[in-house]
Length: 486
Image 1 (tube, rainbow, N blue to C red):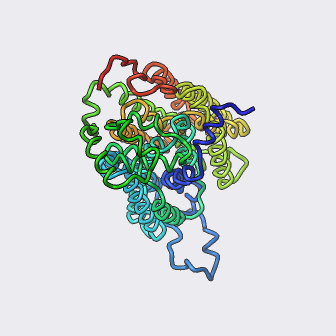
Image 2 (cartoon, rainbow, N blue to C red):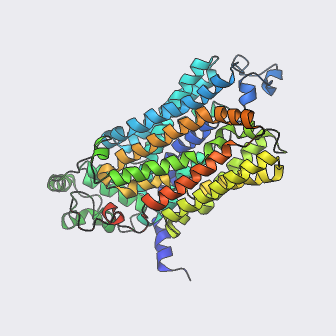
Image 3 (spheres, rainbow, N blue to C red):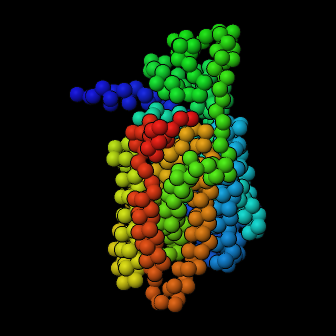
């Protein structure tokens, strides 16, 4: 017998909701794609290995550059420039999405992906390819801010944890094919976004209550009540809006009347720097920044970006197969663990993920030191699997649950800016530190002792400074501010 709660959750999820979430998450898909697109084809891209395509005499892309000669420092810079673009995109996206809407910003990111991927495909020099990766990074940075925010605002409240994890699922779909695929994905997203509505929450904040109600009702389905969801919208008055809930096609004159009455109170948005100065939001900013440092410093991108060169000779498989397996494990475990944040809570998921990654870092360090190939393979796969249980999906949903709607955009930007700074540090300095330690101490794997230590620090921080948000009505309840009045 299916319970009433389960039946209600099934009714909350309809094809239209799934469609708009799928289209919007094509942006985070580009993040994962571009982040690790240079991993497997590194030797071919840098002219160290001959491409199979070079042996084909008649091909439509015969005049396209097949490789770019570069040294290790140039390749590391090319990899990390994507993160620099992501940082700028993440920081600038908060005020843009707050002022002009989530939908417009997502459309701009699709254009950045098209331009960036096209430049990467046609590039014959490192600077041109760097510009392409910078533009793609800016699009990815903005996407990782606005898409989780958009999903949190259109998903049913009880399924936000599940749908929030879809961002990480799409990031995990990063199997390399050719650089030009990014342009095709960006084009597909750009077209699809013309069928995606603006966020109802953003519309409500900007005083367009009637359109917000119509949009939310369409997303939820006309057979489902949205009264409880819109009750906390700024300026909403239940008695006055009740006719809209019964009849979404209310006349224009009635809409204008209600709009003028309900817009007397507007939500005052908190800016990027103001949110840090306000003591009310400082605990949330500290929590989000700490989570995002853990997201990167537990070492997942050492696998995503450098696994081929790092594990070359240690695993009895080809680089392409390694990338496929890692990506497959990431996607499968993320999807399998998607309900966990809504079952056991956000904080337990984070702690489980950090503890598992820390232990796998230790196992990977020892297996590389002792050259135990089977342990290296198992450690890499479980490393990725533990990331997917918490550190992958949960950080992207926390910002919208730790602060009120007025500060979500700014908090999200701080979190993603932190993530990109930490990502840049890993991308730029991991290969240098790895080589230095191996040369000085002998053997391989020393750098993963560092990641194991960082995991211990991250575990202590989350235990101490990150509150549980599951089942909490709002940020005041999360932080125990029961007497707080807005």
